[in-house]
Amino acid sequence: MAAASLAGCKGQNSGEGTTQAQAGNTQAGGEAEAEDGSGEENKTAGKNSGETENNTEPAKDMTASILAEEKGAIAVTYVKSPLNVPSIVEKDQGIFAERFRELGYGVEYSDLTTGPEQTQALASGDIQFLYAVGATSVILAASNDADIKIISTYSRSPKAFKLFGRDDSIQSAEDLRGKKVAGPKGTILHELLVAYLAEAGMTENDIEFMSMGIPDSQAALAGGSVDAALLAGPVAYNMEKDGFPVITDGTGLTEATIVVAASGDYLDSHPEEAKAFLEAQKQVLTFINENQDAAMEAAAEETELTIDAVKEMYPMYDFDMTIRDSDIEAMKKTVVFMKDNGMIENDVDIEGLIWKAE
Image 1 (cartoon, rainbow, N blue to C red):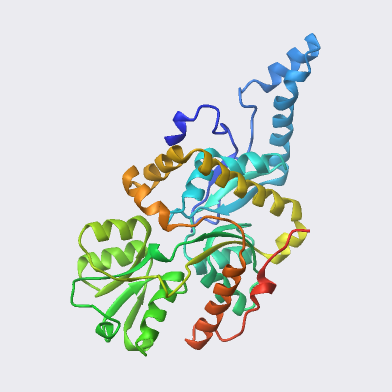
Image 2 (cartoon, one colour; image 1 turned 45 degrees about the horizontal axis):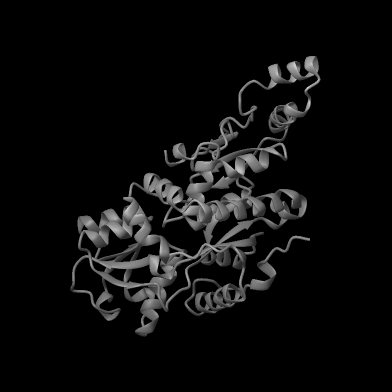
């Protein structure tokens, strides 16, 4: 793995697990052992020799292991598409696991990737942190009175979200009239499509929209069963390299704001965990900035792209976690857009969605 060349950077035995989308987030592991695997022997040796200074960390790790068994695991979504380098690097380096181990938790990952699935799992309590969810999905959930709060920004990447055609016959929104278009409903890609149609005075009713995930949309376009498809990330990169024409990307249509979210109830009752998450998110970004080559290598391995492809795509993304005024304004515009186009019925107070740590 990419981290193999980073001796000492990646936390071993970090207590991380993986959950399956349909399996109810079953926990894998959750225990954290001393890094050298010999905590008990070291602790005993320290008692005999009086060298207690060198035994602090193993003792802490053993205590954290016991606490993790009692407190369980914190579930976090793992979404690597479109090109979520922070998520890939975080998991590769075990940064969440290391940080939450200090609070006595294990960490498990959920492979839920679509907005509706993520917000539903958050509402049910199966997941504590949505680490990369479209602002569109958050707004949709909030409009339906879901208990959801934004705690930070994940990314902005309008150029990474694209609408592809099967051939060059589709050159404008008008050319899509009556055509089959595949893509994930209630997402940034969906917003891109509706905004593109709106520029030509059209609505979703003027096309045949087929709701499906990115992999299925790609397969449908490649197989010729749809006329256009909404794609992003490595899938979009590969389709473009294979010669499929890009009808439009998100530039000028959506800011493609991705955020980090949690339930308001969880944040109110677990403020320290929320602060720890934000500290870990910042640590991930610092690692990427200081270890660019390693980060690109890890992303290439996880996405099965070449390092050159990752480096070509990476500049499309702004991963600054700060919730900027421009992010808030962009989300306000999204609320208006979604309401005007019948995607939501109720207004959403964006400022009210922002969680502020005390």
